[in-house]
Image: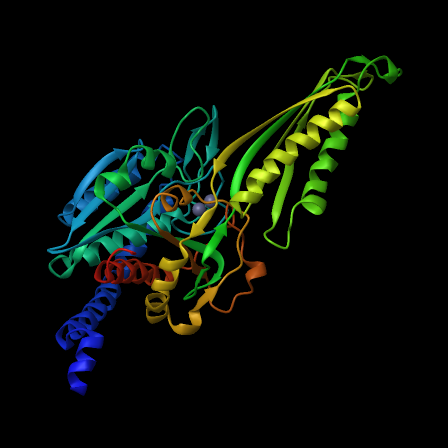
Length: 433
Ligand SMILES: [Zn+2]
Ligand SMILES: [Zn+2]
């Protein structure tokens, strides 16, 4: 009776054994493919491509997936590649995501595979570099595809590989990224019920995984404020309405929203004015000044509240001086929120794969990530993988998007293992109820 109860509680002993064997198989195959993953990564690193221009990267990815017998869709959201690996056993559909684009940054790292690539960007020739580590994301997911394709007969469900273009933002006037993939129906078409994503971190120690349930990365919204006054001679400001001094008041007023009006004990908010333009010379008070900036929030209700308060503040400050202010807020990238139930469910998987002490609850990040467009459609979990040499002081690690950005490749194997184990455990346990 005792034995029967134990069997009922844990499932069949044979199933358990099979499961353990599959974990061991993943580890073995991840070991075997590690060097290949590093080779792919170096090749992609040396040949970086800007957002919506990931043509060669996409070709390499598609060729690799096809060589594994995985069904492939190309030109998804312009340059994206989607792989469909249907396991031989029935089960749900899970998606694993890697972004593929590089940045207009000139590489300064002394590496044999450093990028020397130049490309056209907004009409200028610029250096191009994988300065956010998306090259490692592509290589890790290609590795995971190899490992999972080798386990096809044991896979209880389908794995969708999302190789996504333009995470860093499509060029002006173009659509792109996760948003366009979702609009094109990539999740619905394949019946995806959950999505996982991994981002390498240049200042996180190799071997670590950092994540949190709920809001992990902020929303990024753009704003433009046009302040209209009345042009006059700089020596006689009373003869007109000065949009420069009004703009100065508005800039400070916006900071008062953050410090005085929203509950920052709930979640932080950042409003930054990044560009001010107006005027032609020292002794003319101009007719108009334009302010541009970015808004970062971690709570959707606060996000709406901040947008509304910004309008009230700018419009009323302008009015007090007889000027007008037009405020335009464009929602750009939503908050990246990890589904709490799915995050909790994956906890044991992450700890088994990375080691109990290496799974770290992180604080949220005010930078945005367009994985949010996927995670707003189906439950998603996003995490940061260590890419900094063990023992290095994180303060000395060059940040993402800089010319000295560097990734320690010994961290990549864990990424391959995480992808495979998360997919396998999710498929075995079934979709969230
Ligand atoms: Zn980036
Ligand atoms: Zn990135």
